[in-house]
Structure formats: structure tokens, C-alpha cells
Image (spheres, rainbow, N blue to C red):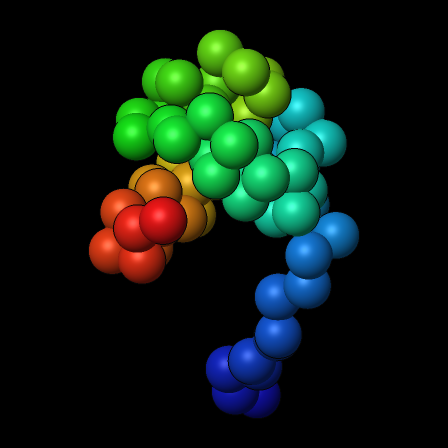
Amino acid sequence: MGLTWKRSTPDELVCCCFKVSRRRLEAVIRTHRLRTVEEVTRLTGGCGGCQTCRADIEAMLARREREGE
Ligand code: FES
């Protein structure tokens, strides 16, 4: 047994509750210049349920913020 490393793919679901993919989240974050998880939830539904995906969405927002436009 050990840890397995899995490469993320654009079509991977980040939010399973609302079936929101990484590709969709990145596009919405970029297009609307989103800064908070609550904004992401309002536009995609992502993170509007169990919140298991919250850390992933926060990481995507932080990366986007660092990279800028
Ligand atoms: S996995 Fe995103 S709210 Fe549950």
C-alpha cells in the first residue's frame, strides 16, 4: 500500500455534488475574474453542497490570483 499520485485532467470533476469540472471552473474564474469561493458557487453551483471541494477551488483561485492576467 502506498500513496498513489493521480494527474488532474481538465475534465476531472472538482465538485462532485454539482458535477463541475476543472475546465469549467478555470474558465468561469478567468472569464469573470472571480476571487472568492462564494462567487464561484453563485455562477457554477460548485461548492454549494458538502464543501469537500472547497480547498481545491480555493487553490484554483489562489493560483489564478498569482498568475494574474
Ligand atoms: S464536492 Fe463540491 S460541494 Fe460537494
